Image 1 (tube, rainbow, N blue to C red):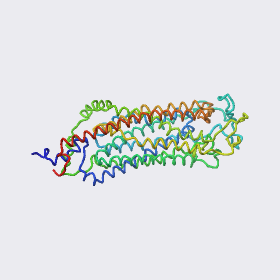
Image 2 (cartoon, rainbow, N blue to C red; image 1 turned 60 degrees about the vertical axis):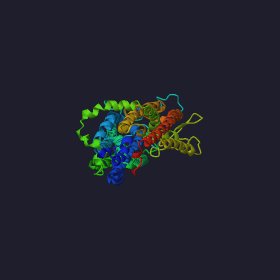
Image 3 (cartoon, rainbow, N blue to C red; image 1 turned 90 degrees about the vertical axis):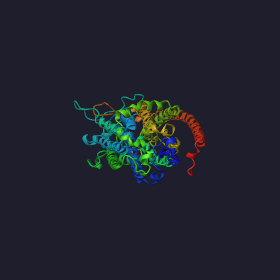
Image 4 (cartoon, one colour; image 1 turned 120 degrees about the vertical axis):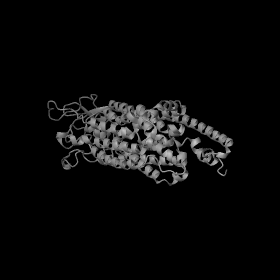
Length: 529
């Protein structure tokens, strides 16, 4: 009997035959230090990319004020990350799995670092920030602007007290396009990290350890935003031109709606960290070390991988895509993910602005809250209107609810568990593609336009044009924000319940099929024979 037909060979072949995995031996998997190194480096990449993403969300208000642009335009800048990701996600996830995955991931992370540094570039080519008309009372009479929130005329209440506009002077800086382009590069670079990284771990880790390793990556992805928002808070408390101007000459404070923090500084820090995370990945091998006695038997297809041309690989793309899109459970998972991601994109992008407007926080903690008293008089804050205390209970309740829903979302298993093993990378790529098209791109832009519709007082730039919004209708803002997010969550969790039911049914069917196979081929299940 040949080696291929021996009982020993059948015992070793069983995991590959019935699980569809290209596996090494347990000894090779357990002892391979390269897998641990790869997971450590990938975890650091997850940390840096999530840190940069969270920092970008925290600078939404700063960018809006610095470039004097509305929230809808800021939404386009935020959505540009998804646009860049959309350009290459499918190609990177499918073709990237056929080549050196660690090196491709390293190239993507390197591109992310370059894009992050590019986002800070406008600060160095723009002039110093000159704050214009005020939306709050100051002790300097030259910087006082009369704003009445009780007036029905919301367009002509701001009195422009700056000198005349120079002929040909640009109303707002167009350099925000550089920030847009840098964020697109970040999106392109990020496309390979998730699909290729998780599929690489799933290929070379034991089945019982794969979920744990991927969970560790997501944990680092959750820790990253914590540091991202802390960095955003620190930079927002520093004046934008720190080091270039005398801080004593700055007459505004972080509580002033004209204040712009050092938004660029965080991009420099996170960009350098991202570049640092990219370099070691270039030195990892294409495949992990294997047991030399069984590597050829366990990986017969690996002997031919280097002979496949791009044309031959592309031929299988259409059938693979068809198999994936005819999987009913996977399609249900896609719809659920789109609804959940829309809610998540709105929350993660505009929560800082919501906190500013609803809870009266400064830019660093996060804005002042002008109110209209019952006597028809405009007050600079609720305290001036006679409020004797604050209700932090609503602030804490809001955070508890947001974090509770985020925590529940983490229980959802990844889509790789419901597709054929050979389609793992492609399934992740299609998932991320759909999320970008129907969630990541439209959600910040559309909701940014809705936020603009709640603006009561627009700032004015040098030439009298409309700048960034200084004050919002907090009640309408609250109804829009919480109402839309709650509706999306409700629909998504309904689909999640249906999805969970289908998954349980599929698992039961797979267990029954496995028992039938064991009864039919007992030699495969008894290592003593």
